[in-house]
Image (tube, rainbow, N blue to C red):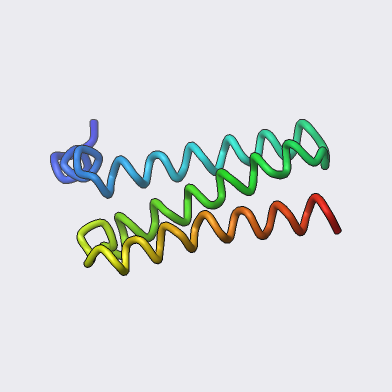
Length: 92
């Protein structure tokens, strides 16, 4: 049975984000392994990666409580990165 410190970690925002990151990693691996290199699936996997980047930035780099311009720039970076990588994959 897990100790109280493990349960407290999982109940916090960082613990939940960590569990979501682990689940997203498993899902993206399963999608990539089972569906080959289809373009639609690659864009979905890149989207999952962008969401993972966002979670790391917000919850482990503490950008969730950062000043609005910094948070907006980070959120825009995540969207722009996904769009750029998806466009490069689809059109090159």
